[in-house]
Length: 190
Image (cartoon, rainbow, N blue to C red; front, side):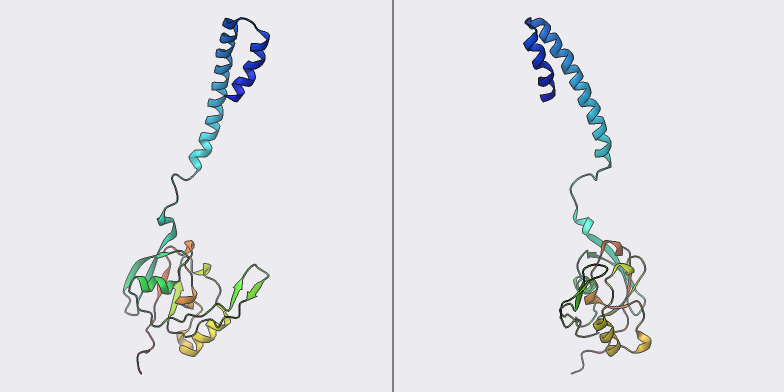
């Protein structure tokens, strides 16, 4: 509309007859409508590629496959950003006591790892094995987590895929990942 007004204003000031200016208005408005249609076509191809609608809760949920010691499989949804231990707790999968502790360090870039001076995991009961799609997107294992795994589990029970469930946060890439839950260590003897 501003474009049309800018095109018409000089014509109206130079022409005195209303009929002529009205005809010019129609001509200019047709040009403006044509230009608007052309620009809307250019935009419509860009709009077609954009995702339809607002984000959904389903965008923040992934499916994880759990395999227990007996070989039974169970697929459960997990929220991105939650730990695997929290997901197991929500769905009644027993991993034993949590090994919660403040983080030891945080990787800020390829060249900088910030020490946070936390104690890290405090027990190794929540041992799991991450296999398949997205397992490599988990944060790297810390030296404290390795030490705890070696203290609580025998050497032949710890593998390169071994992690503690409280130390692994779920990412979008983990959709469809398999999590093996080994036999639990006895933790209920007084």
